[in-house]
Length: 256
Picture 1 (spheres, rainbow, N blue to C red):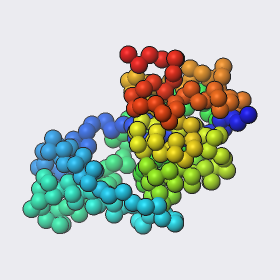
Picture 2: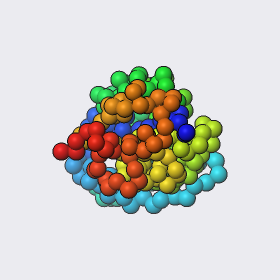
Picture 3: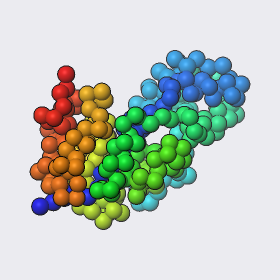
C-alpha cells in the first residue's frame, strides 16, 4: 500500500495573491520613477504580454541570472503596448524598481485558509512549494510568515524547468527522494498544476476557489489522511479525468 508522504503547493494563486492588480502595482512603480501610467492599460498589456511569452524547454541547471532576463523581456512587451516611445533608460529604470517591488512586504497577501491548513498538515507530511518563480519567492514566503512550514522550496529558475513541463515535478521528486505516487500536488491552474502534475504521476488536488478551499484538504484528515493514508483514499482528492471546475473532493463538498 502506497502512502502520501509529501504535499507540494503551488505559490501565487494557491498560497497567496497580490494585494492589487498587476496594473495597479505597475502604475505605483511608475509614479515612483516619475512616469504617469494608466493602471487599466497596464493590466491589459501585462496579460497580453504574459500570453505572448514563449514556453521554454527544460535545461540542465538553473536559468541564467535567476531568470531576471525573462521578466525584463515581459516588461518590454508591456511597454511596447502602453508606452512604445518610452526611452530605453526609462524602461530599465522602471524594471529595476518593479523587480524589487514585487519582493517587498505588503505586495502579496496570504489566503485566509493557508496558516491553519499548513499548521495542521506539517506534523504528518513533508511540505514543499513548487512554483514558476525566481529567488524572490523566498523573501515573499518569509514576509508572509510561512517559509518555515516548508522543507523544500522548488523554483523554476533554479530547477531549470517550468510548469507545465512535467520535468519540474520530476526534478523535485528526485531531490525529495520520493516516488510520484507518494506525493500530492495542490494548485489552482488547470494546465500548469493539474495536468502537469498528473502527467508526472502525482496525485492532484484541484484548487478552484471559491468552490474548493485548502481547508478541504483537512476534510479527510486526520481520519483518513496522514502517514498511513493509502493512494486509493488519496485518489478521491482529484483525478486527471475531472474537468476544470469540478470538485476535487468528490462527494465531500458541493460545487454549487
